[in-house]
Amino acid sequence: MKNKGKGKSKKDIKKDVKEEMPQRIDYSTRYNEQVPIGVKIKHKNEIFHIFTEEYKKSVTIKEEISKIKNTPVENIKLYFSNRRIIEDETMNHDQQIRHNTVLYAAFKLENNEWESFNDLINFNPN
Image (cartoon, rainbow, N blue to C red):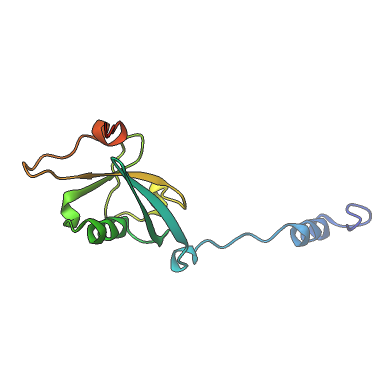
């Protein structure tokens, strides 16, 4: 470490301190990177493992579930365990969907009503 303060001007001290400080991380390019994540989807007694990317729209998770369950995307709602609904057009990262996040899937029933969130988390097959 440099000897600060002895025989140096304030300008030289500021320059030394600036050189020793770690460089700031530039996050502006972060949205161009695709960070792969695995998300666990629970639906009653089923668990799906969906692989997507952190900086993709959340609807991509529903699209993968749609392929597995052969159900239209519009007939799927995704929730966090605190009952907060996942917004389709927002990026996974912005909704705090990270690797190993657990989400709950609800499907539209034949009578056009949605499955109850309580039924999803308290499912008892017996």
